[in-house]
Image (cartoon, rainbow, N blue to C red; front, side, top):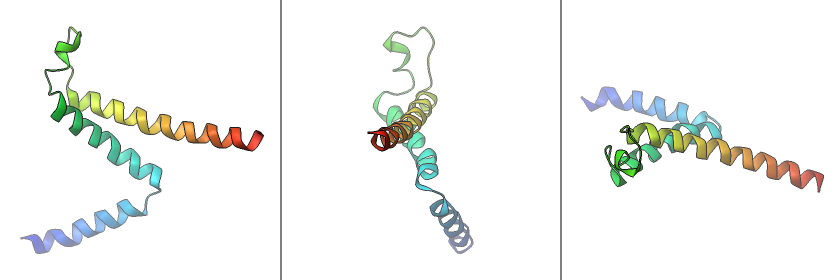
Length: 86
């Protein structure tokens, strides 16, 4: 059974590693944030934090993780530009 999945998994891993680091982070960080938020808070925990509507922690983790990666990259770009000017 696993003999057929090994070449597929190897091809997926090779393609993933061929992407630039930023794209790899865009794929990994939101997923890790979603899983972490789910494990730490749980799905209904977000509803008890002051919101009237229950927010799925996977969705909140994806949004938070994506924002962290994008804003981090933007910060790197701004820092490089500031260093060039100064």
